[in-house]
Picture 1 (cartoon, rainbow, N blue to C red):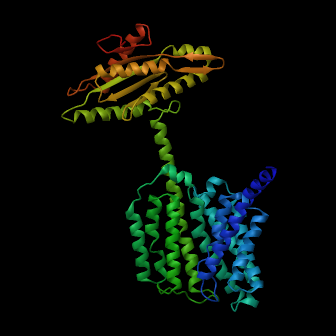
Picture 2: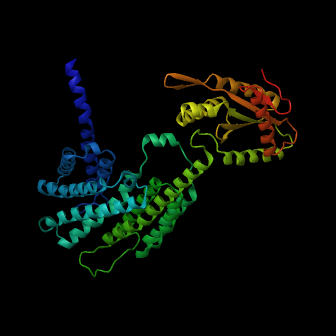
Picture 3: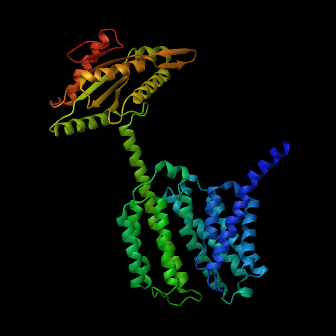
Length: 474
């Protein structure tokens, strides 16, 4: 038994490092096999993926983790027939890119790092540029022995590839929601027009060709950025950017640049141009998402009472008037009942036990009634300890039984405070209209129900009274 106790925690600590080693080896092997013979990789996502993984799972971002990353890259390179000296050095260049970008972005606040602000997008671009410079500079040191290209050409080739791949791949990993968040949000419908326009613009770019063609999808990407969340936008920028890079590399777009600068090739120019093009859509996506979040919070604050979680007075007024207007438009109008509820002796509770306990009473009271009500029934806090309920489809005579059920549920509620259990009660007044009869206005319903509520309080509280009938429900 003691042996098992020692072994199992060791395995649990080692497993993430084994997973990191296997992931790096698989990504590196795939990147090597996909690149052209005796050439740098056309698209090398290994470094950006590893940065994203280490930022999302920082426990493995230590000396052992980075050593395993480098070892896995070297092993994959040697397995594919590379000489051991280039394998050691050039994978050290890749490690330099990974470590630099990770080091810079790990200092950025998590909110920005997860691509939820324009500052985060700019930070990712700056970090990728710095990491690409480190990798290109290290690679250029060995340009003469292992490359036929000049030092400048080697530096530009490494920088353009590392930078463009980083800004295309890394935002996807950083903005990706967790599995729990995706399950909680569920499947959501995606508006197709922006996506279809983007695909069409990509096809048109390839068909039209020329240096300016890489900018054709920018309008569609901006539309997508205004419509979709940042994660989906980053997926689309990755798709668009990689498609254009492959099209340029395969000479499908007849893209060319003047050779005024030695070592500058068509692919280098295209990579850098495409990388900069995706900056705008990603920033717009973050701004748009921030605006949507702000509007949602403001709408929530205007609709939901912050203390009790029920509708606010203004939200209730809007929905109740809409419900009454809808009822008037139907030939066979359904019955409807409005109830006013007031917690008995609430001021005495506040005076005796303090406002904190009073707030607790309000929260538990609201939660108790919410558990008793059904979907489609409106429940709101009118102010202080006064609440209102609308029961569509229920006539006042039958709603009296519902009101009595609510009264008993509140009476059975006990609020625990220190060594005391506070018992609260509620008085209820109701009014409404039967089926196929014109409904009074909301103000009239509220006034009549309020009169019935005062009658309930005058007759001893903890009871239900109906407007006009003025009789207790037993």
